[in-house]
Image (cartoon, rainbow, N blue to C red):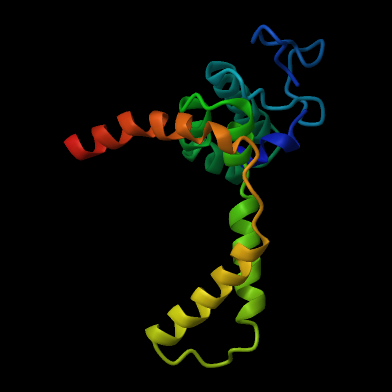
Length: 158
């Protein structure tokens, strides 16, 4: 859910300290942006957002955010360089792929079997791949591999 972060405006200064949003210390979603450089500050802000949502009659949205809070902070936990963090914090790449798949398969009215589905998905992925651009910060992908190694080792041990 970190992709929603750009929709929020700054409540953390450059030193990572929380800055009051208004005189009452309340949460104003129009004036605060999720600070992505500090995991603890981001967690505090998300919890404040949950409180604001609950106080303003959006209990379902608050419950959804509370449920996915830790997953929302995954990109921050990896400690990626800023350009990679920005790329992985959005859903743009997958939305682009899904949109292309829908466009390619829009006229299929009857899906016959798994083989047909795989053929159409394969065609859609090839069309989408032709439009993909290089990831900004692609030179830092080694940092992503390094960050993922301890997590993968922990999953194998469990």
